Amino acid sequence: MTTMKQAWNERAEENAMKYILETTNQVAFWDSGKAAAKELAELFGNVTYCEIGCGIGRIVVPLADKATKVYGYDISSAMINQARMFGTPTGKLQWIEGYGDGEELAKLQDVDIFYERLCFQHIPTEYLIKLLKNIRLGMRTNSLLLFKLNIVSEDDGRYWKKLENTNTWTSRGYTEEDINNILLENGLKQLLKLSSPDLTEFGQHRMIIRYGE
Ligand SMILES: C[S@@+](CC[C@H](N)C(=O)[O-])C[C@H]1O[C@@H](n2cnc3c(N)ncnc32)[C@H](O)[C@@H]1O
Image (tube, rainbow, N blue to C red):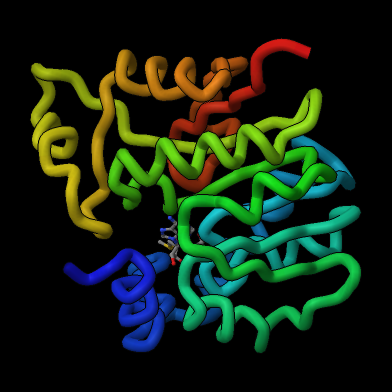
């Protein structure tokens, strides 16, 4: 089976923008990243961010101008290599290539906001659980994790997204209960559910803070 890493390397080599945003329009691509970075900075301010699945840096690169520090983590070396052309690593911006289970993220202890865009929905559930465990370890008190997953229920037409849960591309679906169980298992709890237009780009996002401390 093609691994997650191989699959995303192949997509990046074929045409990264197409697989990230289903566009080949460079202006629209980078403008959307600037808008998302502005939105994050307006919500959370000049703090330390880590994007999980940062692709070629659409959001992380403009965000670095507005942040104390930004980490861009991705499973694909081909994505990260292209990202380096748009954002040279500095004290403020760091690229991290990993295996998609977030092991490197567990070591970070300076991140205020972990976030993802268009990444978690592609990850098979068993990997997503490992990733969340490591993010949780990398969180310090008051760190937040912002993410979006598709919520489905048995009686809507998108329930197949929950059942087809093995490849690294199809955007998968979870019931509210699934999500709550995954979070609980990882010591995370939902703090807020934000809806468009609070976070305009892709509809509903959830904001999570860890339990305790
Ligand atoms: C659709 S793209 C979105 C890129 C970026 N978030 C954006 O919005 O511009 C998904 C990205 O997630 C990365 N990815 C997929 N699975 C991953 C995993 N398990 N861990 C880290 N990155 C992953 C892919 O390599 C790809 O760069």
